[in-house]
Image (cartoon, rainbow, N blue to C red):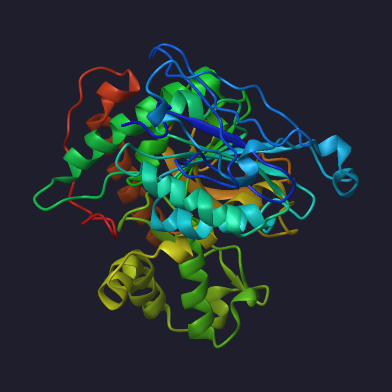
Length: 437
């Protein structure tokens, strides 16, 4: 597929001040730019000439049919200079953020939160690098149009493409949302293999071209094992930098505890989701607190905690799909924001947050070399440490062991994608994730 004669693998557009853009085959104020098709082995960027009194960019020359000329789209023909703009002198250095599945519903909520400054702060300019597929490339252009029309001052650049080796160039954050949904008759093992191949390729691309300290948050399901696959294919990036998103599960647990206790959710703290983002996940009420008190001291109905509470959190996504007719895109995007903030702002004293992280060196006795959701704390520098002041009882340990067994089985099922030999699938049961169908 070709867009404006440019290979669809990547399109990069610089913008001025508060706007962003993408290339299109439209006419804007009679400003035109010419370009030529390069051989597949070469990557190209398209720039456009503008009026003589404006900043000029180099112009590529078209050797083929002039009917195939591309047209500039508004401010995409222009360049910007952060250093030259008075209002930006107090801003931080621009950061590059990649988002895969950028034309999907989750991204449709998330991208505008990122661009507004809600996530990284009101003085942090960003460049968004949006990864899609050939089929979604026109939708990516539509996303870029909406971002342009929103006039976000902090959004200085948008790039769109279908090749992760181009899109992930120099990124400092990679939010990997895109994944294939589970189709009719598809076994969970098949889903692990199909999506695992996507994340193996993205891991290789990150390893090749991303910042050496890139932070990676995997959202596409099955996210724990996809994060492991991605990490194993990126050996030059610290394993600690890979996260599987379990923050939505934590948020759901806080909501249910608040409802039962009759308090607002800001009174609920120290909630942990242990294990896999599946129906074997373990929402931990033993260590959670309400108004500083242990949950079991506030909610006396311990049977409710062990049965109804746990099941509600595990199956909340499926119930939402039944009610709403679609998956929880908006709340997922909010949880991605929460997950990022937990890493870039210091954790409140005494509290912690949940994230699916690499288990090597964990203090809980959980099997090493898997990605497992555990309690973490951060100093706000993008890094984290394991929480040590947690307690366990037989109920909690039994359920942790079950979700651990599931993740170990998933790991065996994708051994061919992690460089660990021949895959062998012996999944204990088909714990379908909400939204997989």
